[in-house]
Length: 224
Image (cartoon, rainbow, N blue to C red):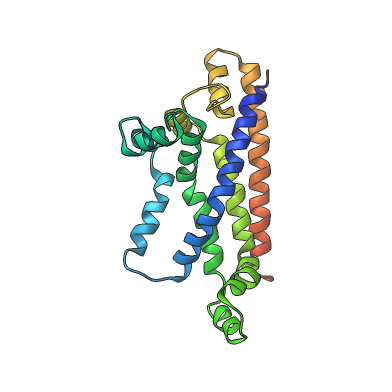
């Protein structure tokens, strides 16, 4: 049996994560690609931490930060009226954090690949910084931007450890497709687990195919 509600929630979480993370990741990636400042390597290392931290460790720290005893948790309850942890909002905030490297790094590499003399030449032609970004930088970096969006979307769909720690397993609120698969396996319902796993596999393969396709189109013509 396919749990459509869990799949819909996962797609909703992935969509909101991409939409909210895209502008912030664009700004951060552009700064890291072209600006040289004290502590830059430390910032890059901090943003890459979700890649190496075990999901349960990251989930534990996020759960502690979102809990009712934390300043953030108390402030959220005071404003919204319900806890940040074990809610879709908390799940979304956690998703934004654990997807940072997947969103930023492909964009950063794409901006770094833009020739250094492009922006000064455009400025000499009278183009404003915003026009340079929108009409020159963004089109040139678009394959990396699209790769980042696809990877972020796919990673959100498949994340399990952080989602379970921060969101728990609340149907319609925090029960994602990955958690539903785990529950079906625990219940020895391998048929349902296999069906949902196949759907997730197909979505992930499609996302990876798009990411590789855009990366290939970004390669210089005649490259080895």
